[in-house]
Length: 212
Image 1 (cartoon, rainbow, N blue to C red):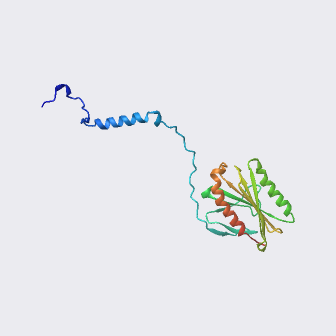
Image 2 (cartoon, rainbow, N blue to C red):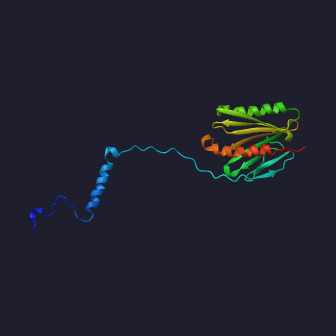
Image 3 (tube, rainbow, N blue to C red):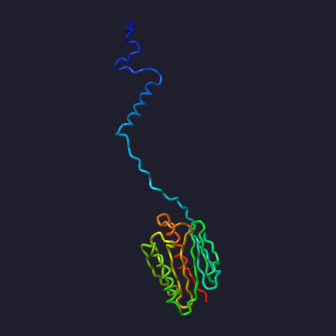
């Protein structure tokens, strides 16, 4: 039986057009229309800016004994620089950490019966940072058998120096230190690096030996 001419090209119920690519084009068109509908529209929220991942060196230490009045262990990844500034004195050095863009400034003073004045000066230098610091934590340490007495100051906030300290034998030697970074202070991004280098500072303090 011949199909009536008026049904030629007409899609009959239950049939699928067999023209090449027609079904695919219809499906894609449906997806586009669906995504243009209100139910598919979503607001875009940008992700917060992240910080670069830092690779930390392995914790290995070496003895530094080039100074006349003291010696201690420093990180193997540190470089000691003699402070040659116009106000520098004998025994003043910088322990630089090039990989982490940080530097520990160390200044030495003989006590000469001026211990209280030296401690007061150190404390005043720390508390000059109160403009930026929202908290300053003081942690004393005492090791009588090694003649090591001192204080560690942890400064919270976008301060120029987040860790400062002094160590003394109380009679002859006084050593003050402060951690600085060669970058704009940003505590959120620097916190992991500060914590990492604070461990090195503590190791330096705990291995300090005085020379008489």
